[in-house]
Length: 92
Image 1 (cartoon, rainbow, N blue to C red):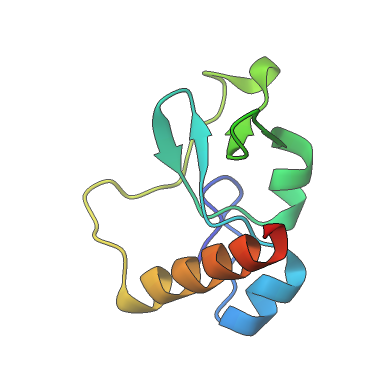
Image 2: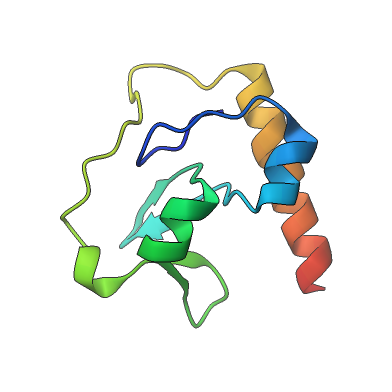
């Protein structure tokens, strides 16, 4: 899994959960992700609806590393699901 902002990589699901990776966030209506804890701590905040979003001052200013022509790997999908489920368990 690679941070869509800085390119930092992590391969282990458990480690990504422990380190606080964010599986996705919104910039307006567009969904991006995943994001490492360093980038999320600086660039993201929690919206009123509970979803993570890009801070207002960074809207339209971030160049993402996402490969729109590439489908996510099975491992990336599983890591994102595991992180999302863990975050939901924590919030509930």
